Length: 74
Image (cartoon, rainbow, N blue to C red; front, side):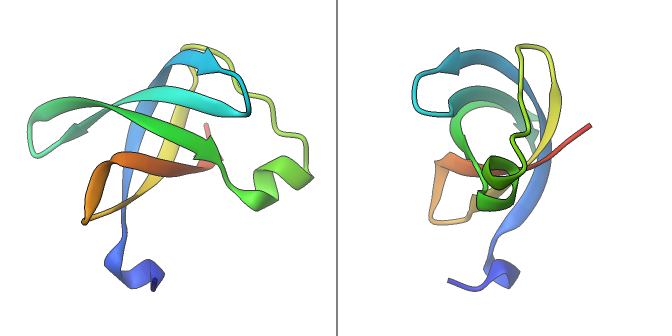
């Protein structure tokens, strides 16, 4: 899938789960959602650690807005 079809939103990590998965709160068009996110490959390779409360960018597919890839930590 092209990255052009995905959109990037900013969210906050609310819970850490096993296997580098996280629950992330994001706001899309004024509505708040809790999605499942996992680390991108570059973040895994560089051992970027995430904690609850971290601000992150998440790439979300328009076909399934309940899952996403965490691509950046602020």
